Image (cartoon, rainbow, N blue to C red; front, side, top):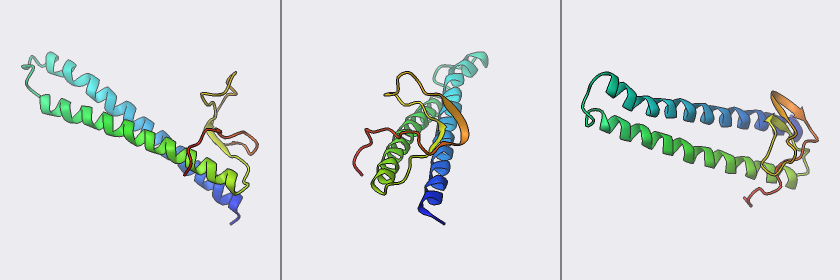
Length: 124
């Protein structure tokens, strides 16, 4: 297996991890948003279920922190790819905040081996 093949596999797995964290964050936030509504619909006291609400809110915070970690992992892997002289692999949505105008994307496969990777990756 070549370094390019390994890089492509890493890119696909990184995208899968990013997507999984985002999905978990969305679902947990939906749960947190529904808890007070469910309590009210069941005609329960405001104190009922507070611990569950607190724990769900902590879960949202933990997932947001995990998302930050995986974003930094993305930056580290992009920096490593550049250091090794590997072509950038774009997997999934490729728009970055510094892109203007947006360049599009959204496929779950490799989009291009020439798509630039974010240049402001932190040192790893």
